[in-house]
Image 1 (cartoon, helix red, strand yellow):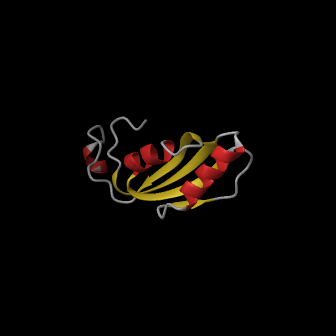
Image 2 (tube, helix red, strand yellow):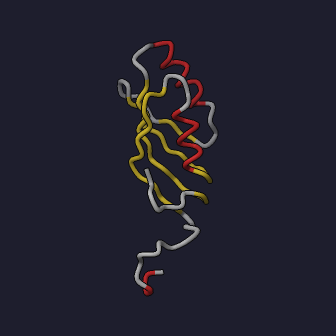
Length: 96
């Protein structure tokens, strides 16, 4: 998903979470997502739920969210890395 990027350290991610069509699974997913302290949820729009994730280890958080019953897909719209741990190797010297 993020080849070559180190996503450990503080980051802020905008997500679109696709929920299951089944009402029971959707309710289970919404309850589990609302219980996460690192996630702020927007208003659902049909099967889609906008969210903002504030996490130290974004990859682990994405995997945890994807594993919740009733979550069909997690799409990353934007990632802001507050404090990159290392500059990418392909940046020119003046940019690092």
